[in-house]
Image (tube, rainbow over all chains, first blue to last red; front, side, top):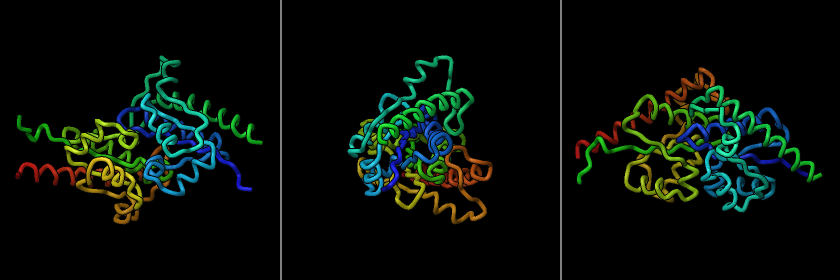
Amino acid sequence: MKKLEVVVIPCSGIGKSLGTVGRVATYKVTDTLRLKETRTVCLALLTAGDSDALKLVKENPCIAVDGCPAQCSRKNIEVSEGNLVYSITVTDVLRRNRTLKPEGVIELNDQGNKLAEIIAEDVADKVDEILRGKK
Amino acid sequence: MSMTLADYKVGIICCSGEDFPEGTISRVATRLVLEKLRPDETVTLCLPLFLAGGEDERAFARVFPTIAVDGCSKKCAEMGTRKFSGKPVATIVVSEVMKKYPQFKAKSREKLNAEEMKLAMKVAEEIAKKVDEILCKKTKK
């Protein structure tokens, strides 16, 4: 049986640092914290209707990591009829961590990286919860 | 009211593809144009917002010229722009630019190393050249 992976998809918004925070948080999960249990997919490819990307999000649990309340990742997963199980928005996490001031789009400042770490930990916990529930 | 060249902006829409290093290169190159090479002549549009139905983004791309910056030959940014607003004036594909610079390899997705930053700058220079061509045509009209 094919191993179940959790698909983590950030919005990668490019106008503000919040999109970069979501993107960096995603890589912290997929490349380090839960390397074997997760993967990502190009959001633009999914919304372009690529058949492999559509199949991936329909057959696996998905987590949306959005930068702002527009929640483009969440919305695009829903429109693609993906199996969305959790959604987290950087602005909500920032509200609970008001001392952090993320800056930079090409490269995040230290506080932006700290915020990305907080989000990555939250997403990693959710991945564990999802996979425990599937066993 | 007529529009002067100073009012004229070129929209740069990159794919930001999350699954490949080329997506990160497209994103960083776009920001290098916006922040360093052509800050007064360019704006960027959030592709996911554009695709999710952001009316301001779609309206901008209908009125102003756009350049799509794609990581790979699937050209998601070009396709999305064409579908919801109009054909981009130009498309730059990172994997194509990379063929001209075989000495640079793209491996990182999260944070580009010094060599990858040089590659991103090469892509940014190609974008800036297209911006100049577009604006030059406008001044001649």
